[in-house]
Length: 325
Length: 302
Image 1 (cartoon, rainbow over the protein chains, first blue to last red):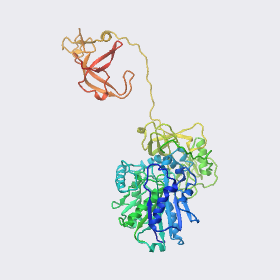
Image 2: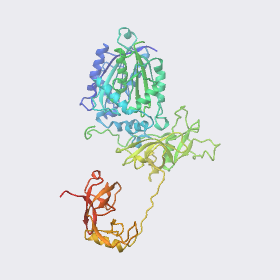
Image 3: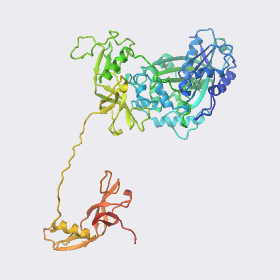
């Protein structure tokens, strides 16, 4: 595989309410920040992750491009998923070898609608969506399948978030990720661009796997796809100092720690994780950014990032980052 | 969403989606009041049925476009078949309680979402369980579908699942005509004058209320009629959480009250005081209304 590294990461100071900014206005500061950090103005490839249902505006991801300046035409793509999966597409694109840089960004304003029912729209239209099964309900079904000290997970996340200036200032620990507006961006570099830089977090392994969509077809107490992604990404090949996990419900952390094979020596979600700020469609990308940041600043020699999509941890992406290519 | 919405996203009439042969068969069977699964090459029965085995990716239909009858795997084991009737009953595995329900939920009262393993299936169906209270829910609960009368071929043709019948209500009501005579007649006559009548045993000197004609301890005939109360003290009490037409509210207190001058307590309602403030030894006084004791109430400081 062609070595690829994170060269820059930025996120907004997230809010629990709509500040009135348009989506391009929300994205613009993080795009400017990663351009400054990376020293790159143009990118060989651009990929974003967002969900038009959050704003209730079809093709809103297209108007979000106004924040980039897309003329003359750029090579651009979009996933209707968390931007962590856009980062995967960008990583694959860099493997082609003809471009050496990629901009990845994700954004979401969950405050505009009813996120719990918007998440019903991602369910299959035959068996699940007609029931009105909402996000809290299917998460509750998974929560009942697993033994988890959710209060302890909530408290640890809340305490960790105190040192995260970008997280929400929540008055008390929560077991469900809070409604959040925000955005994040990452720059990936490869090839010659790696030589010019020392402040990099190399992606040593990245993979995503998927479980059956229908919750009744799975053992909800475990995540086979997260375990398979972790194996494919090589999580077990060395000690993991830090793991940033896409935990939107506290019980999911227990399932993921088990699936990724993380031990007591791993610091889980030192940023506070999604239980401290959950800008939907950017939350998973922020996990990669937070893991990369700790590799870049020397806090962690080897870090793991996880992102998820779909009901009850249906699809899972795992990345391993370190200073070594 | 802090306020009333001012922007609606809607696709008028909704999307038209084709079902394919497997989901279409399942929904058609639902419309007819039956639940079917599909059998995979590994002999697993998927419910609800999928076109492809999630474990292998192989098509589940051995005969694409099959429209024949559902076969019974016990009576016709040698036949090749794809669809298998399951249930209609099943067993709850995971579940989560919903209170209050959302407007898009199948029930307008608190209910459970559950993963239900229908009899004969190897996977679980997600549906609602109308259990009444969360206390009725548990893993292992047996549930049956409640069908809608007008079915259209939708997963919501099953309105919800409901627990098996495990109890019935047996009503008892018979009518009588009762005439208080003897000692009880005299006692009630006393109450109509706001007086508690008691009897004192000439041998052991015990004072009994209500008034009675013989001493239950020594058998002596009681001649002496004495008045006791209307004040007294609580000896013990109970806080009742089931409604009673005579009680002022729920919860209400029933108490044993030792009337002043009596040797045995009577049971009566205790009111005009929060249940939590009732204590043994509390001084109380009868409240008379309509020629009888309405209840007792705390004795007020004069």
